[in-house]
Image (tube, rainbow, N blue to C red; front, side, top):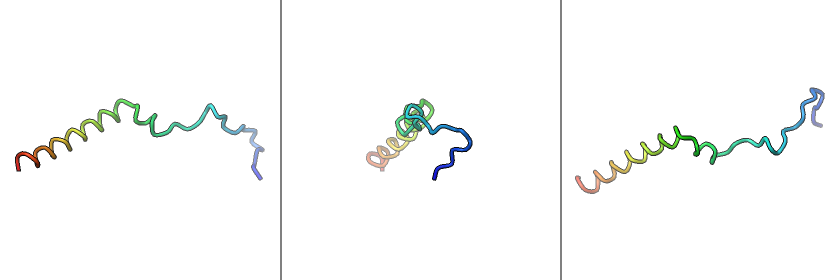
Length: 51
């Protein structure tokens, strides 16, 4: 049985939790992922062509 004695209404569908796509749309995270990706790309190119 659900306790509703506090008078709080359950969360409405408009207040759904934000998911992964919302997190990926944030500029700091995208900048971080771009920097990490470019470092990995430079390391891979270095291994391919210079070693």
